[in-house]
Image 1 (tube, rainbow, N blue to C red):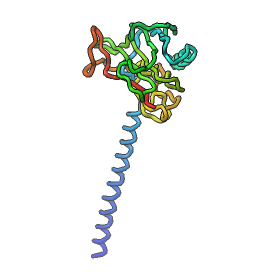
Image 2 (cartoon, helix red, strand yellow):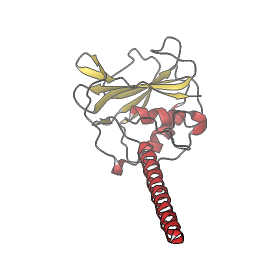
Image 3 (spheres, helix red, strand yellow):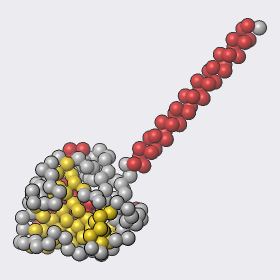
Image 4 (tube, rainbow, N blue to C red):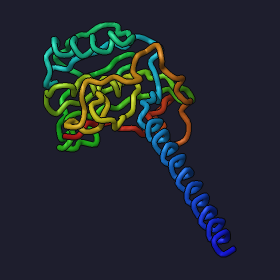
Length: 210
C-alpha cells in the first residue's frame, strides 16, 4: 500500500517537473522569437522623389566614394537623381537633396565621438522624407553607406555585422531586410516630432559611434 502511494506521489512530482520544464522551453522560444523581431530593420520614412546627393566642398569624402556608396543602395532597389559637387553649401537642408558636409563643432548637435550624423526632414502628417543632411567627421569604411541608410529612412539595427549597426566596430556589410522589394509601409509621423515650418523634423538624430 505504502509502495503504491509512493509511486503515485513520485509520478505526480515527475509530471509537475515535466510540465514546468516544457513551459520554460516555450518561454525561451518566445523570447528568442521576440529578439529576432526586434532585430528586424524598419524604415521610419521614405522618399517619394529621387533625392539628388550634393557633396559640399568641405566634406571629407571624394565624389568617387559617394558614387560607390550610392551604388551600394541602388543595387538594393533605391533610386537617386544623381551626385553633384558644390564648393560652397549655403543651406544645411534643401528640398529633394541629401547634402553631405563636414562634421565640425559648428554642426548642429555636434559630438566628437560620432563618425557621422544624419538629420532627415519629414513632411508633416506623412512618412515622406523631403530632405536630409549627412555630417561626416572622418572617412572610414562603411560610414557613408551607413549614413545614407539613415538619409533613406532607416533606423539603427543592432545586429552584429549589419550595415545599420549603431557601433562601427560591431557593424559590417550585412543588408538583411534592406532590399527595396520587401519594405514594410512606414508609419505616419505622429507624436514626438519637432515642428519646423510646414514640415516636421523627426526627433531621430542618427549617428554612428566609434
